[in-house]
Length: 202
Image (cartoon, rainbow, N blue to C red; front, side):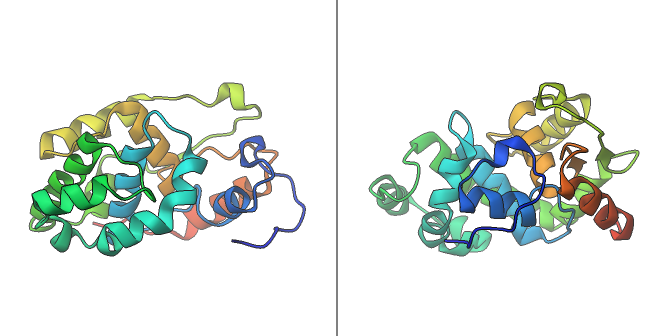
């Protein structure tokens, strides 16, 4: 369990849970080009659909153990016995459709990797670069955008599942395609600086 972070102005959704605060302070909105992390987060966002993100965060280590560290090559070889094993694992979200979609998504991810990286694919959808918003209230933050709809369609065309526009917008926020930290949050300026240094993968 992460230690309590020092006091600073944060987005209100981070609440008081040290796990959520650590996620807010170290991951959310940070741009990167690590395909393994991008694949893991895409799978976890799919499992989050219909649930709260804190539920997924609390189960993340169990997910990593259950899915062999999100090793796509290994997941792609999963069969009926693995599905049964995962459906019996109380540490994760036991949803057969999402489990089966994860296996399909691993295969799709590997097929995509034969042509390009997931990072390059995602960032190529951002014609004008990352979206750096300047919201002052959570009421201003959208649940879906034109960009998330476009990326959702592009991922579905490749064969990915559980990648609807709302899920993908949450994913974009998480992996730094969008900076939706409120301008009153200390992490807003920090993520802007990270975007300034970030080089889009090609």
